[in-house]
Amino acid sequence: MTALAGGAADKLGNQYELWWTVSELVRMLHGQSESIRIEDPVATKAEFVVTSEGRRILHQAKRSHPNGKWTLAALGSADTQLLQGIYDQLVGNDTRFLFISGSHAEELDTLAMRARQSESLSEFEGHFIGDAKSAANFRRLKTFCRNTDNATAYDVLKRIEVRTPSEKDIREKVTWALPALFLANPTAVTSTLLRIAQESVHKTITREALIAELASQGYVMRQLRNVNNASVLIETLTQDYLASVKHKLIRGSLIARDVTDKLLQRIQGATRGSESLLTGRAGTGKTGCVIGLVEEAKRRYALSRLRLTGDRLTPVPGQPPS
Image 1 (cartoon, helix red, strand yellow):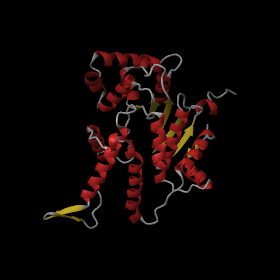
Image 2 (cartoon, one colour):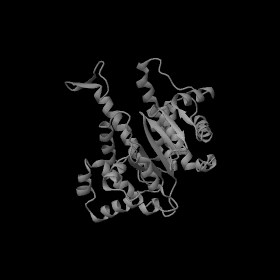
Image 3 (tube, helix red, strand yellow):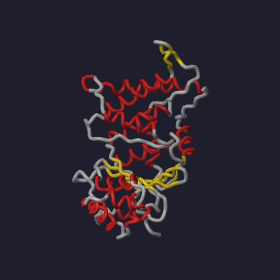
Image 4 (cartoon, one colour):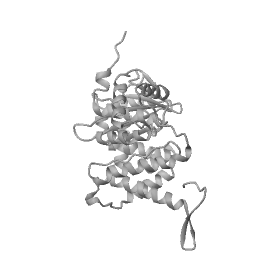
Protein backbone atom coordinates (compact mmCIF):
# COMPACT_ATOMS: atom_id res chain seq x y z
CA MET A 1 0.00 0.00 0.00
CA THR A 2 1.30 3.44 -0.88
CA ALA A 3 1.26 5.91 2.01
CA LEU A 4 -0.90 8.98 1.52
CA ALA A 5 0.97 12.26 1.28
CA GLY A 6 0.37 14.81 4.00
CA GLY A 7 -2.06 13.90 6.73
CA ALA A 8 -4.30 15.63 9.24
CA ALA A 9 -1.48 17.26 11.16
CA ASP A 10 0.32 18.26 7.96
CA LYS A 11 -2.64 19.40 5.88
CA LEU A 12 -4.60 21.30 8.51
CA GLY A 13 -1.84 22.02 11.00
CA ASN A 14 -1.44 25.55 9.68
CA GLN A 15 -4.04 27.93 11.07
CA TYR A 16 -4.35 29.83 7.80
CA GLU A 17 -5.32 26.71 5.86
CA LEU A 18 -7.61 25.57 8.66
CA TRP A 19 -9.49 28.87 8.79
CA TRP A 20 -9.93 28.89 5.02
CA THR A 21 -11.39 25.38 5.25
CA VAL A 22 -13.85 26.52 7.92
CA SER A 23 -14.83 29.54 5.82
CA GLU A 24 -15.75 27.17 3.01
CA LEU A 25 -17.79 25.02 5.42
CA VAL A 26 -19.72 28.17 6.34
CA ARG A 27 -20.16 29.01 2.68
CA MET A 28 -21.57 25.52 2.13
CA LEU A 29 -24.00 26.04 5.02
CA HIS A 30 -25.20 29.14 3.15
CA GLY A 31 -26.04 26.88 0.23
CA GLN A 32 -23.18 27.86 -2.08
CA SER A 33 -21.88 24.29 -2.50
CA GLU A 34 -23.01 20.70 -2.01
CA SER A 35 -19.97 18.98 -0.52
CA ILE A 36 -16.34 19.31 0.53
CA ARG A 37 -13.69 16.60 0.65
CA ILE A 38 -10.68 17.55 2.74
CA GLU A 39 -7.38 16.25 1.38
CA ASP A 40 -8.81 14.25 -1.49
CA PRO A 41 -6.09 11.68 -2.35
CA VAL A 42 -6.85 12.11 -6.06
CA ALA A 43 -6.43 15.91 -6.00
CA THR A 44 -2.78 16.83 -5.64
CA LYS A 45 -1.74 20.31 -4.51
CA ALA A 46 -5.14 21.01 -2.93
CA GLU A 47 -6.27 21.33 0.68
CA PHE A 48 -9.76 20.26 -0.27
CA VAL A 49 -12.17 19.85 -3.18
CA VAL A 50 -15.51 21.65 -3.24
CA THR A 51 -18.38 20.39 -5.37
CA SER A 52 -20.75 23.12 -6.54
CA GLU A 53 -23.50 22.45 -9.10
CA GLY A 54 -21.70 19.25 -10.05
CA ARG A 55 -18.41 21.02 -10.75
CA ARG A 56 -15.15 20.42 -8.85
CA ILE A 57 -13.27 23.39 -7.40
CA LEU A 58 -9.84 22.71 -5.94
CA HIS A 59 -8.58 24.98 -3.14
CA GLN A 60 -4.93 25.47 -2.22
CA ALA A 61 -4.21 27.82 0.69
CA LYS A 62 -0.75 29.02 1.68
CA ARG A 63 -0.31 31.63 4.39
CA SER A 64 2.54 33.51 2.71
CA HIS A 65 5.78 33.36 0.80
CA PRO A 66 9.05 34.21 2.63
CA ASN A 67 9.78 36.94 0.09
CA GLY A 68 6.29 38.45 0.36
CA LYS A 69 5.03 37.42 -3.08
CA TRP A 70 4.52 34.34 -5.21
CA THR A 71 6.24 34.73 -8.56
CA LEU A 72 5.71 32.21 -11.35
CA ALA A 73 9.21 30.96 -10.66
CA ALA A 74 8.35 30.38 -6.99
CA LEU A 75 5.05 28.65 -7.82
CA GLY A 76 6.76 26.38 -10.33
CA SER A 77 9.94 25.72 -8.35
CA ALA A 78 11.10 22.18 -7.61
CA ASP A 79 10.14 22.61 -3.96
CA THR A 80 6.60 23.89 -4.66
CA GLN A 81 5.52 22.61 -8.11
CA LEU A 82 2.11 24.22 -7.71
CA LEU A 83 1.81 25.28 -11.35
CA GLN A 84 2.60 21.74 -12.46
CA GLY A 85 -0.04 20.40 -10.08
CA ILE A 86 -2.65 22.91 -11.22
CA TYR A 87 -2.04 22.02 -14.86
CA ASP A 88 -2.29 18.28 -14.21
CA GLN A 89 -5.61 18.74 -12.39
CA LEU A 90 -7.22 21.15 -14.87
CA VAL A 91 -6.18 19.89 -18.30
CA GLY A 92 -8.97 18.23 -20.29
CA ASN A 93 -11.88 19.00 -17.93
CA ASP A 94 -13.92 21.88 -16.48
CA THR A 95 -12.44 21.81 -12.95
CA ARG A 96 -11.57 25.14 -11.36
CA PHE A 97 -8.63 26.00 -9.06
CA LEU A 98 -8.50 28.63 -6.32
CA PHE A 99 -5.11 29.70 -4.96
CA ILE A 100 -5.44 31.52 -1.64
CA SER A 101 -2.55 33.20 0.16
CA GLY A 102 -1.71 36.18 2.30
CA SER A 103 1.07 36.92 -0.20
CA HIS A 104 -0.03 38.07 -3.64
CA ALA A 105 0.69 36.05 -6.77
CA GLU A 106 0.54 39.00 -9.14
CA GLU A 107 2.01 37.35 -12.23
CA LEU A 108 -0.37 34.37 -12.10
CA ASP A 109 -3.32 36.52 -11.07
CA THR A 110 -2.79 38.94 -13.96
CA LEU A 111 -2.53 36.19 -16.56
CA ALA A 112 -5.59 34.36 -15.22
CA MET A 113 -7.66 37.53 -14.98
CA ARG A 114 -6.77 38.58 -18.54
CA ALA A 115 -7.60 35.09 -19.82
CA ARG A 116 -11.06 35.31 -18.22
CA GLN A 117 -11.62 38.81 -19.59
CA SER A 118 -10.74 37.86 -23.17
CA GLU A 119 -13.29 36.23 -25.47
CA SER A 120 -10.91 34.07 -27.49
CA LEU A 121 -7.33 32.82 -27.61
CA SER A 122 -6.50 35.14 -30.50
CA GLU A 123 -7.83 38.14 -28.56
CA PHE A 124 -5.87 37.04 -25.48
CA GLU A 125 -2.65 36.73 -27.48
CA GLY A 126 -3.14 39.91 -29.49
CA HIS A 127 -4.56 42.33 -26.95
CA PHE A 128 -4.25 41.00 -23.40
CA ILE A 129 -0.64 39.78 -23.39
CA GLY A 130 0.65 41.93 -26.22
CA ASP A 131 3.27 43.67 -24.05
CA ALA A 132 6.68 42.08 -23.63
CA LYS A 133 6.36 41.42 -19.90
CA SER A 134 3.01 39.64 -20.14
CA ALA A 135 4.11 37.61 -23.15
CA ALA A 136 7.27 36.52 -21.31
CA ASN A 137 5.21 35.50 -18.26
CA PHE A 138 2.87 33.46 -20.45
CA ARG A 139 5.84 31.64 -22.00
CA ARG A 140 7.26 31.01 -18.52
CA LEU A 141 3.92 29.66 -17.34
CA LYS A 142 3.77 27.21 -20.25
CA THR A 143 7.19 25.78 -19.40
CA PHE A 144 5.94 24.93 -15.90
CA CYS A 145 2.76 23.47 -17.43
CA ARG A 146 4.66 20.62 -19.09
CA ASN A 147 5.60 22.88 -22.05
CA THR A 148 2.00 22.86 -23.23
CA ASP A 149 0.66 24.75 -26.23
CA ASN A 150 -0.97 28.20 -26.12
CA ALA A 151 -4.55 26.94 -26.47
CA THR A 152 -4.28 24.48 -23.56
CA ALA A 153 -2.51 26.99 -21.31
CA TYR A 154 -5.20 29.58 -22.10
CA ASP A 155 -7.99 27.12 -21.31
CA VAL A 156 -6.38 26.25 -17.96
CA LEU A 157 -5.72 29.90 -17.07
CA LYS A 158 -9.39 30.82 -17.46
CA ARG A 159 -10.23 28.42 -14.62
CA ILE A 160 -7.63 29.68 -12.13
CA GLU A 161 -8.47 32.31 -9.55
CA VAL A 162 -6.12 33.99 -7.06
CA ARG A 163 -7.29 35.49 -3.77
CA THR A 164 -5.21 37.24 -1.10
CA PRO A 165 -7.14 37.48 2.19
CA SER A 166 -5.25 37.77 5.46
CA GLU A 167 -6.00 35.30 8.25
CA LYS A 168 -7.78 38.11 10.07
CA ASP A 169 -10.00 38.70 7.01
CA ILE A 170 -10.92 35.01 6.91
CA ARG A 171 -11.70 34.88 10.63
CA GLU A 172 -13.92 37.94 10.36
CA LYS A 173 -15.70 36.47 7.35
CA VAL A 174 -16.55 33.37 9.40
CA THR A 175 -17.60 35.36 12.47
CA TRP A 176 -19.88 37.71 10.53
CA ALA A 177 -21.49 34.96 8.45
CA LEU A 178 -22.54 32.64 11.27
CA PRO A 179 -25.14 34.87 13.03
CA ALA A 180 -27.25 34.74 9.87
CA LEU A 181 -27.33 30.94 10.22
CA PHE A 182 -27.51 30.26 13.95
CA LEU A 183 -28.91 31.88 17.07
CA ALA A 184 -26.06 30.33 19.07
CA ASN A 185 -22.87 32.16 19.99
CA PRO A 186 -20.81 32.33 16.76
CA THR A 187 -17.60 31.63 18.71
CA ALA A 188 -19.02 28.33 19.95
CA VAL A 189 -20.20 27.34 16.47
CA THR A 190 -16.81 28.27 15.04
CA SER A 191 -15.03 26.04 17.56
CA THR A 192 -17.21 23.11 16.51
CA LEU A 193 -16.53 23.77 12.81
CA LEU A 194 -12.78 23.92 13.48
CA ARG A 195 -12.97 20.54 15.21
CA ILE A 196 -15.06 19.02 12.41
CA ALA A 197 -12.56 20.22 9.81
CA GLN A 198 -9.62 18.73 11.71
CA GLU A 199 -11.39 15.40 12.20
CA SER A 200 -12.59 15.06 8.61
CA VAL A 201 -9.37 14.61 6.64
CA HIS A 202 -9.98 12.30 3.63
CA LYS A 203 -13.73 12.44 4.30
CA THR A 204 -16.47 13.94 2.15
CA ILE A 205 -18.70 16.36 4.07
CA THR A 206 -22.09 17.06 2.52
CA ARG A 207 -24.19 20.06 3.46
CA GLU A 208 -26.91 17.83 4.89
CA ALA A 209 -24.42 15.84 6.99
CA LEU A 210 -22.81 19.02 8.33
CA ILE A 211 -26.19 20.49 9.30
CA ALA A 212 -27.07 17.23 11.07
CA GLU A 213 -23.73 17.10 12.92
CA LEU A 214 -24.08 20.68 14.12
CA ALA A 215 -27.67 19.99 15.23
CA SER A 216 -26.44 17.01 17.27
CA GLN A 217 -24.12 19.45 19.07
CA GLY A 218 -27.05 21.76 19.84
CA TYR A 219 -26.57 24.20 16.97
CA VAL A 220 -29.77 24.22 14.94
CA MET A 221 -29.91 26.46 11.89
CA ARG A 222 -32.32 29.37 11.85
CA GLN A 223 -35.67 28.74 10.17
CA LEU A 224 -38.04 31.48 9.10
CA ARG A 225 -41.53 30.34 10.04
CA ASN A 226 -42.95 33.48 8.46
CA VAL A 227 -41.27 34.84 5.35
CA ASN A 228 -42.62 38.30 6.23
CA ASN A 229 -40.15 38.33 9.13
CA ALA A 230 -37.15 38.06 6.80
CA SER A 231 -36.71 41.81 6.31
CA VAL A 232 -36.83 42.41 10.08
CA LEU A 233 -34.19 39.73 10.70
CA ILE A 234 -31.92 41.05 7.96
CA GLU A 235 -32.28 44.60 9.28
CA THR A 236 -31.37 43.46 12.81
CA LEU A 237 -28.29 41.58 11.62
CA THR A 238 -27.23 44.54 9.48
CA GLN A 239 -27.53 46.97 12.38
CA ASP A 240 -25.57 44.58 14.65
CA TYR A 241 -22.82 44.39 12.05
CA LEU A 242 -22.61 48.17 11.61
CA ALA A 243 -22.51 48.70 15.37
CA SER A 244 -19.65 46.20 15.68
CA VAL A 245 -17.40 47.83 13.05
CA LYS A 246 -18.13 51.57 13.04
CA HIS A 247 -15.66 52.12 15.87
CA LYS A 248 -12.90 51.24 13.39
CA LEU A 249 -13.56 54.36 11.30
CA ILE A 250 -10.99 57.15 11.50
CA ARG A 251 -12.46 59.72 13.92
CA GLY A 252 -15.77 57.96 13.49
CA SER A 253 -16.25 59.44 10.01
CA LEU A 254 -16.92 57.53 6.79
CA ILE A 255 -14.66 58.51 3.87
CA ALA A 256 -16.29 58.17 0.43
CA ARG A 257 -14.38 55.76 -1.82
CA ASP A 258 -14.75 55.12 -5.55
CA VAL A 259 -14.29 51.39 -4.96
CA THR A 260 -17.53 51.34 -2.95
CA ASP A 261 -19.53 52.41 -6.02
CA LYS A 262 -17.66 49.93 -8.21
CA LEU A 263 -18.39 47.10 -5.78
CA LEU A 264 -22.06 48.06 -5.59
CA GLN A 265 -22.33 48.05 -9.39
CA ARG A 266 -20.62 44.66 -9.53
CA ILE A 267 -23.01 43.16 -6.98
CA GLN A 268 -26.04 44.55 -8.78
CA GLY A 269 -24.90 42.99 -12.05
CA ALA A 270 -23.80 39.67 -10.54
CA THR A 271 -25.46 36.37 -11.30
CA ARG A 272 -27.14 34.26 -8.63
CA GLY A 273 -24.64 32.49 -6.36
CA SER A 274 -21.65 34.62 -7.39
CA GLU A 275 -19.37 36.28 -4.86
CA SER A 276 -17.28 39.43 -4.62
CA LEU A 277 -14.13 39.50 -2.49
CA LEU A 278 -12.70 42.78 -1.20
CA THR A 279 -8.99 42.57 -0.43
CA GLY A 280 -6.22 44.96 0.53
CA ARG A 281 -3.41 45.53 3.00
CA ALA A 282 -4.17 46.45 6.60
CA GLY A 283 -5.17 50.09 6.91
CA THR A 284 -6.27 50.56 3.29
CA GLY A 285 -9.92 51.10 4.24
CA LYS A 286 -11.63 47.75 3.62
CA THR A 287 -13.91 48.14 6.64
CA GLY A 288 -14.90 51.67 5.62
CA CYS A 289 -15.65 50.45 2.11
CA VAL A 290 -17.94 47.70 3.40
CA ILE A 291 -19.72 50.10 5.78
CA GLY A 292 -20.28 52.52 2.91
CA LEU A 293 -21.54 49.68 0.72
CA VAL A 294 -24.03 48.49 3.35
CA GLU A 295 -25.32 51.98 4.12
CA GLU A 296 -25.70 52.88 0.44
CA ALA A 297 -27.55 49.60 -0.19
CA LYS A 298 -29.83 50.40 2.76
CA ARG A 299 -30.46 53.88 1.36
CA ARG A 300 -31.33 52.53 -2.09
CA TYR A 301 -33.61 49.90 -0.57
CA ALA A 302 -35.47 52.58 1.40
CA LEU A 303 -35.91 54.73 -1.71
CA SER A 304 -37.13 51.75 -3.73
CA ARG A 305 -40.03 51.36 -1.28
CA LEU A 306 -41.09 55.02 -1.62
CA ARG A 307 -42.71 57.06 -4.34
CA LEU A 308 -42.83 60.79 -4.86
CA THR A 309 -46.31 62.32 -4.50
CA GLY A 310 -46.08 66.07 -4.87
CA ASP A 311 -43.37 66.96 -2.42
CA ARG A 312 -43.91 63.91 -0.19
CA LEU A 313 -42.42 60.42 -0.29
CA THR A 314 -44.94 57.69 0.52
CA PRO A 315 -44.54 53.89 0.75
CA VAL A 316 -45.41 51.83 -2.31
CA PRO A 317 -47.75 49.02 -1.16
CA GLY A 318 -46.40 45.57 -1.97
CA GLN A 319 -43.40 46.93 -3.88
CA PRO A 320 -40.47 44.49 -3.71
CA PRO A 321 -37.01 45.88 -2.96
CA SER A 322 -34.85 46.62 -5.99
